[in-house]
Length: 320
Image 1: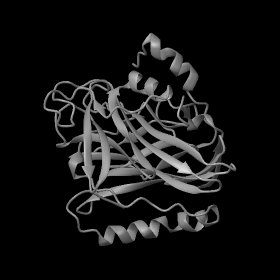
Image 2: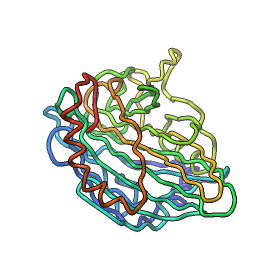
Image 3: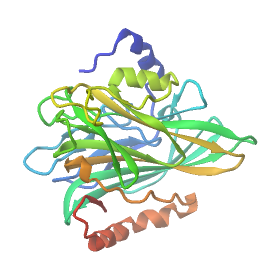
Image 4: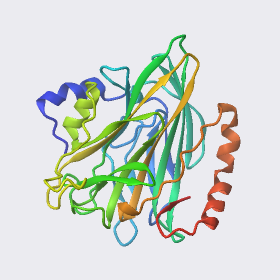
């Protein structure tokens, strides 16, 4: 059960979103599969709003499907208090079993969001799933805008019998920064059930792995990320030390400057995996097409995924 400190309670009341526009994405049932209810602004989790749901992941092996996420949001701001994108009403414009397209506007920015859930493969065998959320952002004002986006994930993994004693850490994979949360604090990136996040686009503004209520409150208040991993002791190896697990959350930030009428893409991914997080290899970030091309692209996802599976020969984790 989540227990907020008195100081964080106001943040909860001020920032829990009322989601508008949502759908369930699923890539099936069985080992490595995920079912998740996402909002039209990209939120999900058991506490992320009435129209969303938890991300239920089935690890490879005998472990049964279980919940992984308490809250997942994207926050944005202009150098002060940040807003939760999920408080903004969104419109869903296209949907398949594994993809959702939506749009919304806020503070002079127009957003088009493509969310896609795909299999991840190791030597042709599914070991997990990847949720990619690509935001195409356009400045609709007549002046330049500078803003930041922070991906926040409070992942409560309960596969080992408890959801409040998780571990995690930070990795760089092929130049991409990945924060991950494991089901147990094992002090390394070796095999475990895990959920991870990454960001692309703009300029990095840092990361944080901290106790969930402190981190969420700091983000909402507009504070800078501190590049800190709580629970990583004197060895400073970027992993929560073995036996030092706690109810942690993850945050990754990016900043953007857009001139009048300019556009940029912010892509954030959620990795659901079984095995060693250090083996994760992310694909290049997707391009975000114009809205008129959504239908053709969504229809082609199945063919593209099949072609990628037939070509991959890597021994690390690959994404279909």
